[in-house]
Image (cartoon, rainbow, N blue to C red; front, side, top):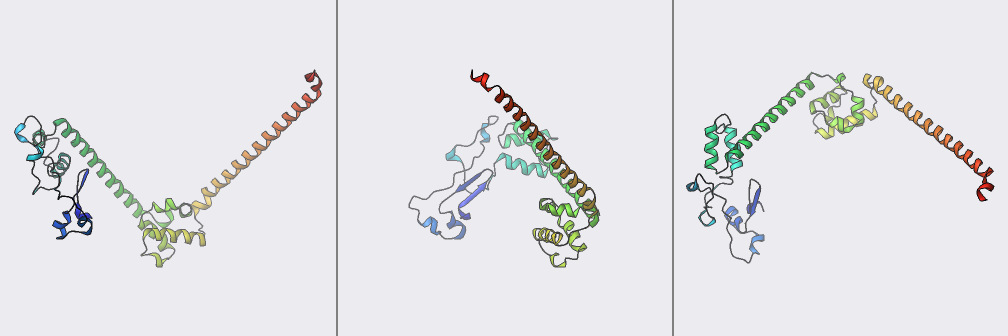
Length: 252
């Protein structure tokens, strides 16, 4: 079915019998079509004779043969020319020339250029952050990771890079998993940690104290609820005793 589609910026057009031009024969899907042959809708083409007014050519005068996808789509062409350095905010003449060529208001061109620069800035920052995290991961050794805590939460373990997972496998000599994919390595590490608990100092120290503290809080909460329930029962008993003594006055 891919031979029947033409895809561009925010559009997809399906055309019957387009498979004949692509593969040289009509497919079984198109052979069942009983209607008249159809052609693709011509994509908008600027009418530069109307400048400084912005207009497109009428439908009947718009060419469709020999054109590339998104050849006059302003957003696509601005993205390409900005990437090549042909249109930049520091060159107002190039921005104005693009606006007239693709019949787009200058304000919209400038706004989209600002957007492209922000996106480029964010992309570079993400690359720098990934490079920094990669350098830090290479400098770490096996003992720098709280493996016991990581193995208890598979989501945290999956956030590690493959070279970081390999540190665990190499330390414990799990050679059979060296060439496995990431998900298989994660499963192997979790399985190994369950079969052979690790004496990790991170686990034996702060983690154990945290668990003891949580259990103490649960015990205190339980005792508080028991005491509160007992107090409520005592108050309820005193109230019922008072009512029983004065019931005759209430009936009268």
